[in-house]
Image: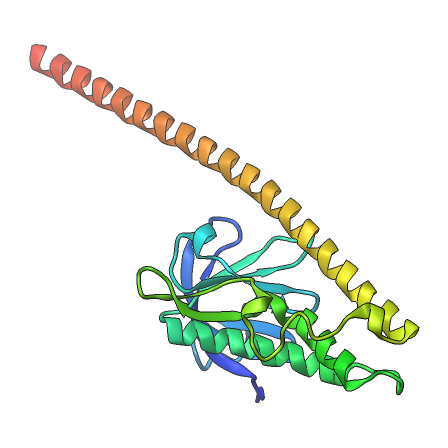
Length: 229
């Protein structure tokens, strides 16, 4: 029996055909499992959250309440919730799961509570929820850590810290910037592939239409030949 951080139905996008299917999901120990329906004994898919970034994806998927689980160098996973409230619950669950990972990390005894707080902040800033309404009166998700009042980005100044802790924080900042660069590169590559895929789909539709027209012509000719007999 799984002791889950979160479980419930989500609608996921297929990896190959990009179709959307409703599946039962269970979040447990940095792994997101999904099943065909609730109550199934065996999962049919698994997404690791280790080193993953969870981001809003409504602009990419054109679906409301959707999110992306992004791994640098790997194909992203997309899913959407039924409501804004459910989406917020899942995002908070991902946040708790990441925080538990931080809590289990071995930390040198010289590390201050402030450094621990900053580490948690940088590991979780990508799934910050912005609850301010937009012009349509809807709340949205944004990758903007400064909107999180509980963990502001200006908590620590590396220049005012001991040398060992300052170096650790600077390494974390550099790693975060590298992840952002990798994410942008992978997203650009995916857009190019999606555009190529769409062009191929358009060509296929044109060919299918031409085949149908040819079949109609052949059928009409056959009918005309029978009438002459």
